[in-house]
Image (cartoon, rainbow, N blue to C red; front, side, top):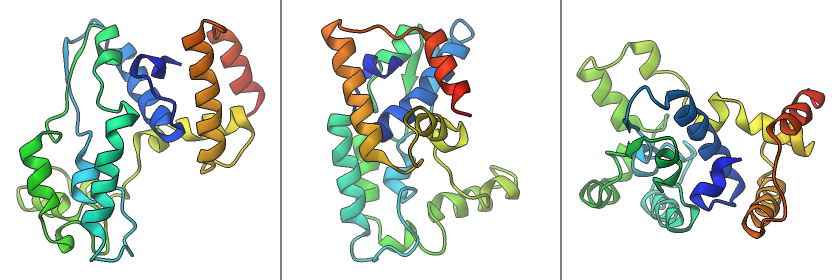
Length: 193
């Protein structure tokens, strides 16, 4: 698991980063810069429940933004390992400050990231079927959340077990105690299907 490059031991963050690491590895040598949309969820309400209390929206998002200070999500070490410079244009202080002051109805209504969806629609930036599709995280779209669950024989939303597993793995890597053979991991995954 390459999440150790970003010093991640939080289960959810490790799942998200694993998807990115697979992408970095696949793209290695093809390009030297990668631009992501990472961070848009935290700024525009993609992580919110559509029933979120409007008075709490900005506070909830700030908590998620603050959390990134220890999750390592925006670390560039993983991409650098594959010779890629990673850029997250949504993640800059001016945009963060602007978004944290937007009224909540721009962030959540009957859908998440409503302001981005409306803007993309008005400017014809994407086909309607993409703009309107259900929002899923990279760890869900890549099924890494299911993969972690199969390894642990747990529910896909059991992030207590996933964090415990990731933390134990992280400690073993850091201490030099263990090395994961990718063929062993492959066997574990396919055995649990």
